[in-house]
Image 1 (cartoon, helix red, strand yellow):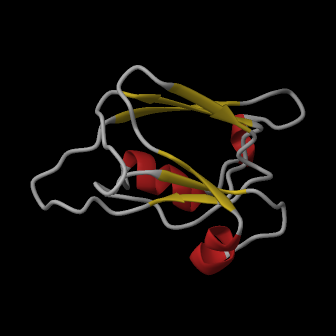
Image 2 (spheres, rainbow, N blue to C red):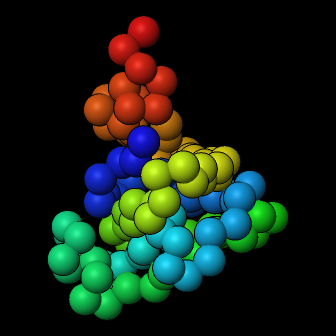
Image 3 (cartoon, rainbow, N blue to C red):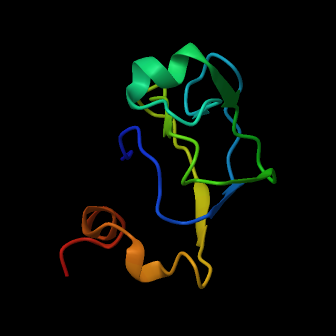
Amino acid sequence: MRYEAHVDSNPLQGLLYVTDHPPGAGGELVVAQCYDASGITQIEENSAQIYPKAGYLVLFDARKHAHYVRSLRSSDAVRVVAAMNFYTPDSPESSRPTDLTKHLFGDD
């Protein structure tokens, strides 16, 4: 499962990697280095790739940097990451888009 290229409503995104995926295996986080990128093509033009390594914690402003995760190359590979969304009084959790809530928690 993956979420398409996007920006988030939260000012701080944390990702704690549980599994390793070296270069060439897929599963890397691709983050735009410019604020106006949208969609995979624009993100790829000027991006940073973060390869999952168990124990790594990545923090970034998810509102300003569009991002997505590349597909895993092996059909039996498993990528595990604990995503943490941090909110502030200026950017409360209630500002999260409803489609993201459905994606994260289902329709219930």
